[in-house]
Length: 505
Ligand SMILES: NC(=O)C1=CN([C@@H]2O[C@H](COP(=O)(O)OP(=O)(O)OC[C@H]3O[C@@H](n4cnc5c(N)ncnc54)[C@H](OP(=O)(O)O)[C@@H]3O)[C@@H](O)[C@H]2O)C=CC1
Ligand SMILES: O=C1O[C@H](COP(=O)(O)O)[C@@H](O)[C@H](O)[C@H]1O
Image (cartoon, rainbow, N blue to C red; front, side, top):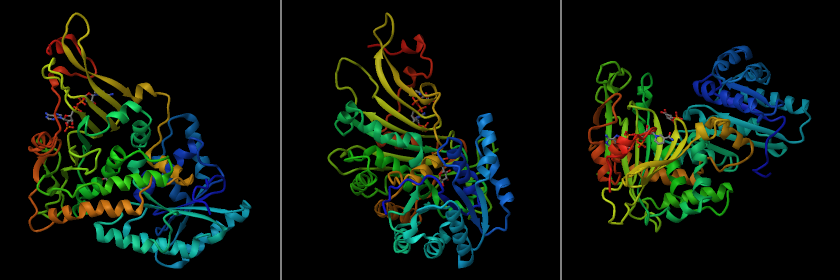
């Protein structure tokens, strides 16, 4: 059966791990969001499944507070949506619950007289039970030739190359790649989804998107909070596994891949894989790692203050890596990946710096820089050198600015999970991770992680909670090709004459 069949009326969605945090904070609110926007049919049946003994009403009470209800109409939609939700309590590792689930779905299908059963299984579960649940679902709840089943799994897809391959080996005989949807929620973010159209639908960009014009690329993830409350969990993971190997690498492939032959999911993913294959092994001597300490004012704890963390932990909560893509388009362009927790702000952005203007008529002219802000407040701005307005002949830095808040104030931008669940219902794999992407990215990260977690690991540089990162950061960025713009001649949002006056030809 075709993988691109769209699931519409009478679809059954089962959320495993329904009693957990992810389901409560992301999965159910996303389903409600789709319903609210008219993108989920009211004949959909949603079944929560978990081990906890809960009634339908208890599940509903638990999930409801996280629903977004911006209008009076949407408040009224909550009860309507909750009528679609029921709960089954059952084990993950034995047949009973799965058999009950199957008979419940069969009853729904019979009542709605469906010709073909459409079942979406969402595993909001820890990796320790992924394969057990996947196996039981395949055996007891898959509709076989009576319908189509899709299964969504959440990261982590392994801890290193060997475990990722082992997970894949267990899943592959059960669920075909066509049925499997590996979520990386960054692929559902508006600005990330925009990368392909932005890059390939603008001819001027295509012409300069290469090493003849681009000097460096930086992809940066900053979070203003630490691991408070989940340090024990984070300790064996670290920031590189947590956000770089997955989220930032997904962004990187979309920024740097070649033009796919079409929007077809496999065409896009083939190009991502080709790009990944061109990345050179990381240079372990060109890595900056850090771990946060107590904030300067003492109000926020250091990483090691968490009792669930080993007192001598070398866990990396901040990392900066520089990689090279060894192909004709990108040879010689450093790509800096930067990620950290407990920093001075929350921000995820891509910065593309262009080569300096070679014309000698200007002095100290700034590089053009394209900033694509993924969050908060989606925006794209291109820093340009222009004449100071008025009588002056000075050159000033200003920006061509696309701020979504003002340009698209009336548009509804879905949450990442809404967008991805919708893609899954439509049978569109473009924004999901394919198995071979994992092999290559883990193949690149595993030697680096082995080094950082091995006997010769460098001690992470301390940085205070709430700072920009370790002291060596600015130097590191400079050494690897990112030039910090001259702040004296650039102000946002208002550029006043006295600022502009500072730069003259
Ligand atoms: N459409 C919009 O919303 C627009 C908003 N703006 C806003 O204007 C402000 C300025 O924007 P922008 O010029 O892009 O600059 P940013 O303040 O975002 O910083 C530019 C870059 O320089 C780095 N940096 C910051 N301080 C230093 C330092 N002391 N030494 C070395 N590197 C440093 C930043 O790293 P790090 O992140 O670590 O600080 C970042 O990579 C921002 O608040 C931006 O959001 C500008 C244009 C359009
Ligand atoms: O996967 C993860 O992502 C979040 C950041 O997601 P965002 O959508 O809020 O940017 C991060 O906090 C978490 O540690 C990580 O596991």
